[in-house]
Image (cartoon, rainbow, N blue to C red; front, side):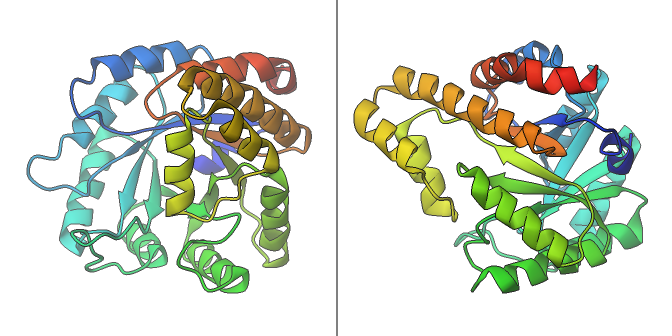
Length: 285
């Protein structure tokens, strides 16, 4: 099912993001089976853009064969026209209809080659395939953007070149999301915007994420970090409760989708969905 059809319903769509495990795939499939009961509309997977030794497409097919709608991620980083074309052929052969096109994080070893920005990747995918394309949005601006105005310009470029759904970077302050959707509307963008949700698991995780991106920590989260420190069990419990309230508020404000970055673990996300089922699944009945 294409993204336009998935997000055409009058309900909040649930989706999950996973990544290829470094070791066996078995644990990931166990986690996905637990989450399957929550009726996700799709599972997105970080994929390479082809190349020898890339087994992400095998994993994508396995996930699809277990009954999930799938959406692979492609990035500009280290990708060439040829490698992306090969990757697109792989996913078309698998039978998926959707793809998420991202710039990706540049490092000393990973640089942009034929695609400098995500809008260029969107344009290439659009010219080569009939795939439905999702892109990233940044409620507080991309970490490399000069300001929110230029950040919205880049987003508009991606939409103008064929993007059909926006999946936001994670955020902890819903007001940042609402401000973002208001700017999106003012920019003349009318495609669905889905909220990226990452349950807090530990103090280390929080500081790693906020060092890599523009993500505001609320005073409540700062107090929790100060209170629980490296007590990961207490931090996880806090993260579940906090994200549950965050999601309930988003659903009440008619968010089109909740896109959970599950970090290949089902526990926190399943507890959050249990906590909000009265809100979200009531809307779907």
